[in-house]
Image (tube, rainbow, N blue to C red; front, top):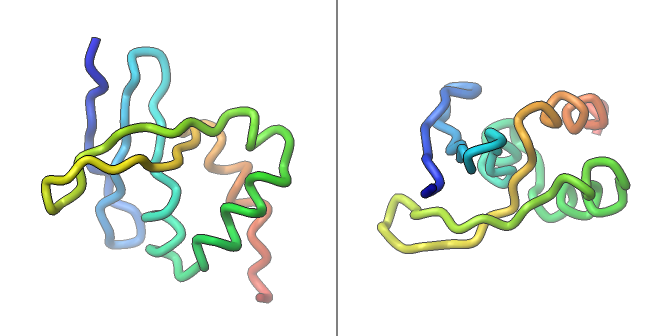
Length: 90
């Protein structure tokens, strides 16, 4: 089965999701950019978090320019866990 993609509105931006047949996954970099977080810092935070990092997957997605890119994704059900760790005072 081929991965199916869909756009989901998030903070006024369209975020790409992928259904790999078992799990709906979200591309993390666009989410960080949509809420004004530095992607590199959030990637480091995800890598340090044992539970989040255990669910990370690199997936191929076709970008708006039509080129295939590898993106880091988390399962949709882990998104709230990641958001809870965002420090709003920073």
